[in-house]
Amino acid sequence: MTSQLADRLAAVRSGIAEATRAAGRSDQPTLIVVTKFHPNQLIEDLAALGVRDVGENRHQEAQQKAADLGSLDLTWHFLGQIQTKKARQVARYADVLHAVDRIRLVEALEPIERDLDCFLQVNLTDDPARGGVAPAELEALVERTLISPRLRLLGVMAVAPLDEDPRAAFARLRGYSERVRTLAPEATAISAGMTHDYAEAVAEGATHLRIGTAITGNRPVTG
Ligand SMILES: *Cc1c(COP(=O)(O)O)cnc(C)c1O
Image: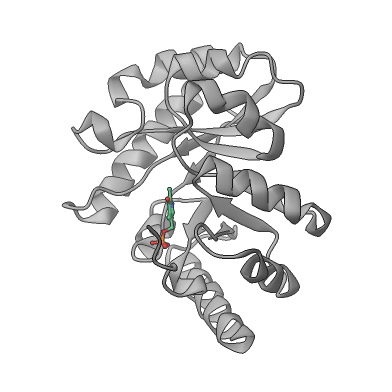
């Protein structure tokens, strides 16, 4: 089991290195291993293999895992939608929020007691239910985030639409990243790319890859 995990992790790492070379990049993107639905043991195994960044997308599960595995000293990335009323709870254990997508959420994070890194999620589809700020509202969200004392804006995040070539979608995301940087020059990060589209994301400048099943195997079936 652990050796399979090690093999899959190594395969993804070399896939990332290959995509990075192909893109002519000299920087290496950060790999976040998405561990949602998997037990603590898998995260311990990943940590033993040198993984430092893990991603979760459900609040209660993430909260429990971060508490149980505090001694591993991992960086916890919260990838899921954040309910306004749960925002302060998420901010207690998460180190990085990837799905900040509305001004009300930024306001709800105002009273937190520690500094928090965040990405603004941009919706690459026309369907508001898919999550993320509409591109037309991006600048207003950036400006509101920048005046929030505890939030450190890292950049933009997105999920590729199901019905579009991911490379084209990530090229749009790169354009939104440039728009953000005219207001926030330090916010250079781009969180994009999952199991099936990370090479395309790397080609379009992704700095943070969120990869689950290619490393962990299929998620346990729940419910
Ligand atoms: C689950 C998830 C991922 C990882 O997906 P895989 O296809 O398993 O690599 C990445 N980003 C978000 C926001 C997710 O919810």
